[in-house]
Length: 375
Image (cartoon, rainbow, N blue to C red; front, side):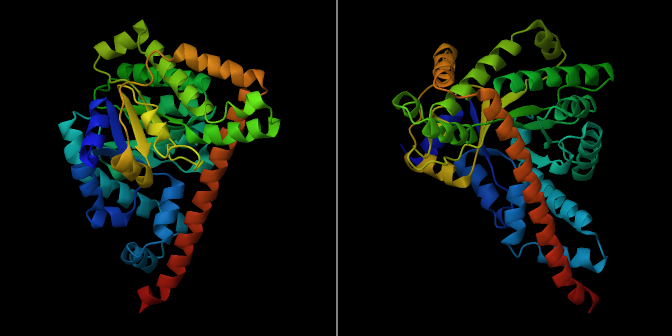
């Protein structure tokens, strides 16, 4: 099967292929457009880690940094303008996809400041600010699924803002996210918003679950424990999909659908394989299901195109077996409540650190550009 056929086959199974990477270079070089036309990519996600790497390792931002330095922009202003510019440009690249899919795909995500992860009101306020700054209909604002983020998800959606909910690790939190989605759309409808343009995905993180659980299984060290390595993440995601199927079969959803709403699709995130012992396409091929998004790093996308095998639906009808896997993991000593708490805390901390690194990188570039901007 050729690379085009492989990726096309995945799309034909109902999986929307999004790229988990964004940079000015990808946009201006035509690489992003090439991924759309040749690799069936229909959306893109970004996060503070991606932006920090992009700004640190590229000269594409020099002209903008000089302009920012010339008007003595603060580091925070510069970070915001740089990221907003990248996302706005990407929205233009994906505008045709957005139009062709009736708003389903062609989406570009921009994250609120991760330092606001535990501040509901500030998250809602910044989501509204970013929505206005980018000013593109195919934008999604990323809001973390922390306890404080749940009402922020509702608040943003209630204001007519499309939301990518990030850092979802557990099925229980996924259910809470879907409830927040329903509440947001109900409030938006009550306020007179047209529900049709409001889009949402729930980014359910995958590979990080195996990384954490496998570490614990190896510490337990029994034969039964070691035999379960590499099984937790896929089982967890499959259970999340079963929860999605249940929630979107309710009368509550039926009323919103009748009013023109589109469902909040599950999005498989963190799909790059961390353990080299596992197949490099594991978190794509084992999670094929209709109506999902898989946002993958370029290495995973290229591996899939090169040697991926695309079977049929691997998720529907697997809830019972997945629950048995979870029960077995619990029996050997895995405390999933603790696993998910650790992963959420570390997820927020990693994005905080990346935001700090991005700010430090931009600050250094502003300092470097300042003499040139004054000459």
